Image (cartoon, rainbow, N blue to C red; front, side):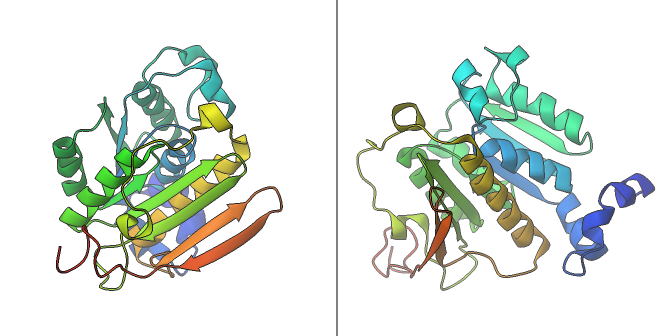
Length: 249
């Protein structure tokens, strides 16, 4: 690290759990973030601010006025711009040392597999089951930990699925593949700070995994009821019959 980096990251280097060694791990780490919407915005911004060396960001959409209520990485003067290009501008202004690799367009199975293979960790900020299942398959095939988050209406959830752990379940253990008819924010609404809370927690879990400290959410699902501000935690076990992660699959 140079002197500027020591100063920029000084407040987190002071933490004994992270220290200089942990910061070096972040600087050398690479992360794929799928989705530059309400969840992806705080994830990308906090990971860049924390000094993650390389971020690959993927999204097929363009910035719309209705996005700006919660997708804080975008601004009013970027309406109509691709979300990945808008995110690149924000992240470059936030921390020019972080290398940002944009992927504009829908991720095919092969593209997703290649992208997951080239990073240390994947953060799922997508908004549909089809993409989430594909991300899970790519992570498990390549032994890459996955930080998954979701938020709608006044409820959010977060979990970690880590194929490096023999006991960790995968996303498919929790949700079985079904026709993708889930409700969207456009149909049901979502409160802006809720995606900020879940996205920030995804960034926190990512940093812990990359730097190698603390206890992650692998094997646990946390659910937030924002209306009452109460958290529930469910223990998750690996499904021995899972088509993705079981030894017999």
